[in-house]
Image (cartoon, rainbow, N blue to C red; front, side, top):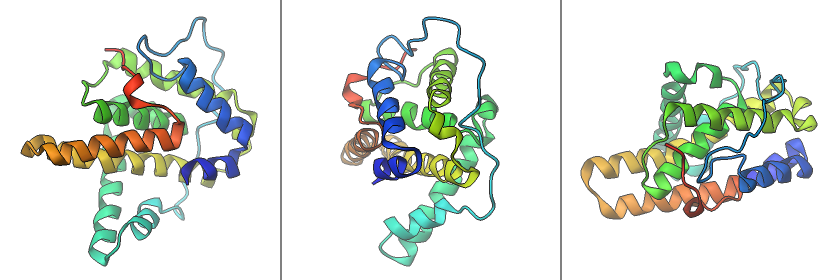
Length: 205
């Protein structure tokens, strides 16, 4: 499970703090991220230098697919999601930063699960900064290797791409059953990773 993997890498205390932050409003809520004072100088604990040896798209395809065709399709989808995410000018500061992957994951899964509009640029940036600050508050995260951070970053993006692809296709084809499947998958992933109930979150506009 994703949560256990995070505990193994960064410690139970660090993971539980991140979960508390999400529930307490430091992640998106009805009124947006709760930052009541000027944030401290960023430490950048979520940042990492990419390593060519990491291939999460392939490993997730191997794990989730049941046939060679499914494995290849899932791997291709995850790689395409990462490429599209990193190609956006507005996510330049998010690249190679676990905080960026967390923000992308949180925003997208909430949008899909609730079939809601995407938040505006200011709200999106505030969510990213809130996650950035949360990671900087975790000393154990500073000890994580580039490889560990990249694996988490790529996995979060992979988890984002799966429900997003189903949701987008369902919207284009007007498929209500597939839309419901994408919403359920997004909600389950959000609960699995961050222990957050999507139905209780409203993204600021």
